[in-house]
Amino acid sequence: QVHLAESGGGLVQAGGSLRLSCAASGGTFSSYALAWFRQAPGKEREFAATIGWNGDNTLYGDSVKGRFTISRDNAKNTVYLQMNSLKPEDTAVYYCAAYVGSMGLYYSGRYYSQHAYTYWGQGTQVTVSS
Image (tube, rainbow, N blue to C red):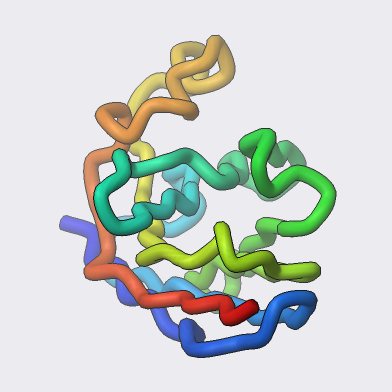
């Protein structure tokens, strides 16, 4: 069983930055890929970014590419999401998630689907004011 706990959300002005953290406990941290998803009010949960098992491979959703950076520290069992140049449309609850399935399926595109992830955090609210 893997427990994920996000932190670092808050209120920020447009153009500002925030760094989200997600601390994991249980399981072996390096044995799963990790991702950040987000969900705005009235919208479906959206893929933001993912990072592979050893941190060498990262992938981003089109809406955050070039502004957000995902990273992981396997020694600290933590994954991060650095968010720069924030926009009001980035306002959402941000969730981290752990993928424990097949690496082949992950890299074939499975990483994009929220249904591929087994463990989820409770979420942290990010609000960007205009």
